Length: 361
Image (cartoon, rainbow, N blue to C red; front, side):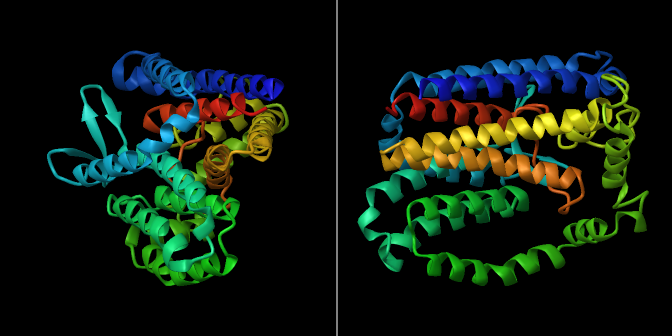
């Protein structure tokens, strides 16, 4: 398992290095225009990187099982923060959503902590109550109620993408814990009408969905971002236009250093660059699954599997959004997009994954 840990560290470090280069490339002109400092976003990202590495190191300092007794406390703290962020004067509104706490120059997104807390909580409950997992009332519904409550609080912000991520990670952990497929299928069918309402009867989501179906119908409006992403990826060709030479980052592509950084990467480094990044994510997922499979402790297996699914799912959603395979969602590309709470919690997750791998024979 030592070789697996080394490989995880190397893959993570490579993705982080690519992220540093691309963030500076994608944000330098924008930062200079906005703040008069071309390195503004790079310096902030480096600060988030150091904090994330420090938090990941703290998570690795003690055996992962020491988290188990605190799983309920983490969930309760997350619920309190998700409620507080909705209160005017406490939570900060940006882009029409109330998702952040503003602490000086730092913004914290409590939903990211909630995702980590949910992962630890589900791993704890599903491992301790393995004998009750075939019971609907005593095995499935209690943890599902917690997932539903956290997802609902995130939806109110509103943030459908993160709520979907909560549910997807939960389903994967339920599968690992061998919950009956009939329970999961029933839950999925029951959620379809609510999902339809959330997408089709909310104006901005409906516009996003229609733009996804035909972005060229309104290339200067709702389809603008994905059209610019297409242009960036298409301009890159096989080997790209060259590092730092992207045209779309010149105030054409919104979110060039955040959610759509992969499009800039594709323009500057081409198909070979994008495939290399996709390959690194696939390798990370395979290494994480290897840790989960080889871990005999169910709590550790669920933790490793949950972290791997969380990173892999966010990467998949981001790549699908940038390439126009699914409607636009506000999820960053792990390790590479400009950092914040999501970036730091991803590094905490890697620290937890390495912790499990260290204790696995």
